[in-house]
Image 1 (cartoon, rainbow, N blue to C red):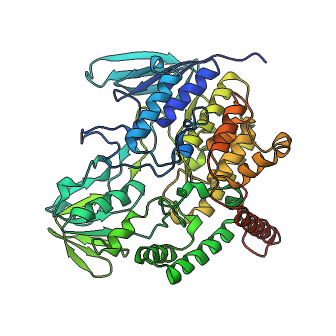
Image 2 (image 1 turned 60 degrees about the horizontal axis):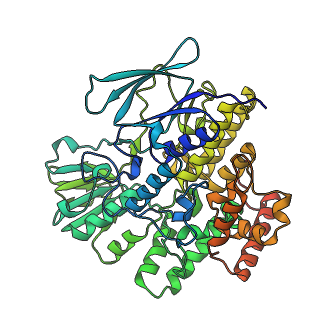
Image 3 (image 1 turned 120 degrees about the vertical axis):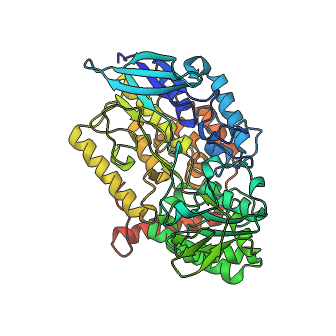
Length: 525
């Protein structure tokens, strides 16, 4: 097959942009990336500058190294499974950049100011220097990959009385450490993955700390159960193949047992929190439990009734409770903003095929990095998106026909709305197992094929082991079977044979019951 070579612009050199560059280069395309910062990293850019939104001093990733690493660049076999700090992950990204010679394709400290489609189908791109706004350069590209990520523009919320509140108001996007908040009377609003850690750190040094939530969010211990394996060691295919309703029932029983028989107060409090949240797999799970320590030691009080209004020096909640405060930390996340795209209006990300392709734009402009697994890592999903985009640009893959494309988008959106109904506002959420399994079939890199089943040990590891990105480098475009297999075999399995057999039986049984309509079946993804 004769392949096409295109001149492609990648916007952003974070974890999504870097892998997009690499995959496009693998397919022989010409790539230019523009990055506003002075080095790669994106959300994991480490800086002491409080005006730069990025990682905070104590950031520990919520996904272990073997799940955060790209399939094309797994951790060294000598490296044990662990949670990287933000600085360690940035070092990994720098090593990845160097290993694949990506730096020569990145123009740092330059921001894309405007992207406009020309009559000939190409794109005019204006880029300005971050040091001198009068220094503007123009380029022409065949296609655009937007990789700026969903954590670029902090989201601020309206609260009645905020304009008269005399205390300080901060956003966790610019949080670095807890020192400035020592002794304060703090109100923390919201608890995303960053927010829950920020609130916990502030609670550790503040005079008092209130955490205001609209609803409880289920939490995952970093090292669950026997404390031997990190939480994502339990993201096995055989567990996530069971219907969500069956998974919820299993977790409810587990938390009831923990609450009743847990020896430590934190264990019982953790279980109680998750029982009150309910519907465990219908949320984006927090991969941190440190906030439970703050609740147990009475350094953090939680109010789930919502905020009624703010006074000059206090907050009034909907349940009538009032609390004096002198500062507010907004853990309210981010909002998508694509002001550099001229004449292009975007729906929410669930209306994009695989969270990346608008049916009216095709593969001329794609969005990489807006597939956020409820359990799992963004880099793995971004890598799959990048591989697909590179193959589309080369002409080796074709998008489905328009009617089929819209049907697949509607099916995807229905599934995500149904399954993640507890977090309807987080539009980037995807089901890691379903998303990766289906995408691997589209690309042609699914590990589930006859040659796999001829290797029983590999089959067992794919079924019972955690779903590492390396699963999808065994076969397909730019595969590396030997290296992927070594990486898969190097990581310990969290389940013993008896546990695997029992849970596999439960999965198969509940799938059968769902098929018969006895329990609720999942929508088609």
